[in-house]
Image 1 (cartoon, rainbow over the protein chains, first blue to last red):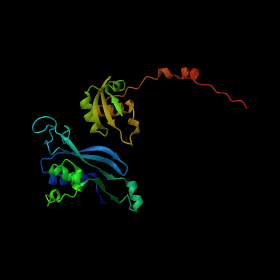
Image 2: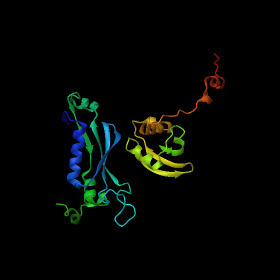
Image 3: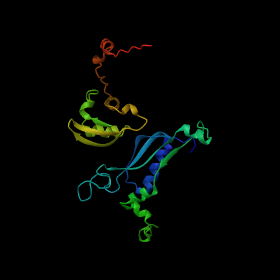
Image 4: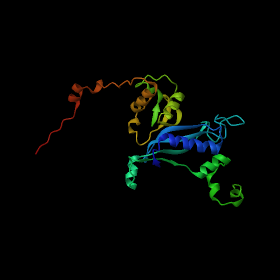
Length: 132
Length: 97
């Protein structure tokens, strides 16, 4: 958050991050949604990095990662609801900001093609050492 | 909210097929969990968020559909509940002291 933060700052920041993380070929979309502490709220999708956003697996058939939807939801987000600032003594007329809830384990699963989130927490060093 | 596609047509003259309709709804704020086939045709499973209780009904979803496709909303007939009939049918109560 800062002074003069708009929804455009939010979309630009997120899209830049995702392009850097997944590569320039990835497509993105924001869908309107609702969360109690942001207004407006969105959910953010990327084109499925496993099937290239086609919904079809390499050997034919439905892509198992996006279940044929061609999109994978990454996180929910939004512009901080001005009412929230009152609780932390910020002036909602002066400041604005965006919030997003993204799990680094979820990002890692998508980037490295890991099926099961539990593997990250089983502390198998042979697995963990693969990530620099 | 399970939306029976054919029931929606009571309230809005939608011509788009269920798949396309579901996709348009999803991108306009009514998230769609999936489409099933029921005894009355396609059933769209709409995830209605807690700020939109007005969408917990076919009329509410029809209002969304009307907004997407710029179609007028057809109000359901309320002739069965006209003032004259309701007065005659309304329960009467009396109190004795």
